[in-house]
Length: 299
Length: 299
Image (tube, rainbow over all chains, first blue to last red; front, side, top):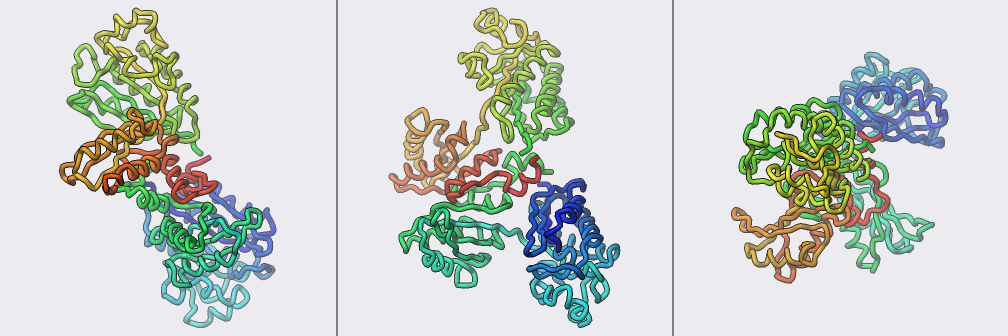
């Protein structure tokens, strides 16, 4: 199996397409990686970029993106709805195939070190890469945002993992980390009764006594007049799609409501789909490299 | 989506590993294709080679394989259990991704023309590439085998699609064609009663009133003391795995027998697995390029 890592840098620019394009250019030019998606939000004044490829390629490409962002984005003049502390605000590495979470933690450390040494941007490691439990949660690391960082970093508790305890004057501070792949998965119900949707949500989400690794909310799709259970599966390997689907079906049945359909928004790793095949077909001994398309790009 | 074709040449050598390796070497050396699997059968004195990659790469690699086989395999001295008429006996092209069956028919024609022009091996086109319905079935095309070909080809009805109506003196004749991907799929039952297995087989196979595109037989797995329904799904897109699984489950239930598990032997195309996801999760609007690993290698 080829080694594949996904990387999802968030930059603090969502209004000037030229700057966004300039930041993305290095990804298009780097050997061994491929741009999968990017989107800008003008209210947030922020762009989310998704690319993937070889571990070395990802580190190289995102370093160059950070360099470009440092050059072109000035946080002293930045305003937008989304919390942020850096020109490149956050960079997670996500294991896709042939690499472990530990490998991604190593990539985060490599990148963090290089961002300080070459760009003079201090770095916090977060989530699976965090140097202590209090730094796992990005929201807590970022609290105070760019404007509050000079003060926050003076506290020894918040000394950065790489670099000196002061933000870069215009590019701020970056959070670099490693996390599991997140699948955006929605289930649509044959009902327009939002109350039923909300009751189902309260049965299935982690926060309310349901499945771990599931964040869920209910909303009404006006055009279809169907209630949608909109979810983030934050660990689609331990808590696979089929289990979520079958539990929603089970909870909906008590209201006499059937499932109309489901959808994957954006990307899903092969291994998450294989979990479904294994469950429904009771597949034994199946290996991803038996899939022709994947075998082709393996070792 | 990248264009991917699979090619499964069968050569009439299964006893001398040096000759087999020499024939496979061009596949390893050709840019844009990858050797996926090969196996030799000494009783049959035959080897089956599976590789895949770009359409041009597949034609180039298999032409060089045919050239090597013509050089090293002498059918006048060949004996083995499996019917054969050529040093390279048969070459099917199989559409995997981003290519149609018609594209594969074109590849078969390109290769056939080149095999006659450069190697002086006459070629019959078969299955989807057949020039008339009577040539679709490989067994009928090959009837008479190498020893009978000189006589058979004199009949205008059996003039080859490329080349003169006489076999190459040592390399014989080759069948080149295009066909759908075939999935070898087995379902194991919680019973050691082979009679039940045979009854189920008679309900599900095409030949006996069951599903089209399904070839099936029942056998007893001695070590597990389970009956296995061993199948070839010759069109896993029109007749997908989930339908076969659910029908076997249904027929087994009348005997109070449950399914123990199922297995894919060898390779399966992504699209065949996606059919299962779509059915069981009622997935709407799913596209293969949403799978991270595939998106990476797309256009």
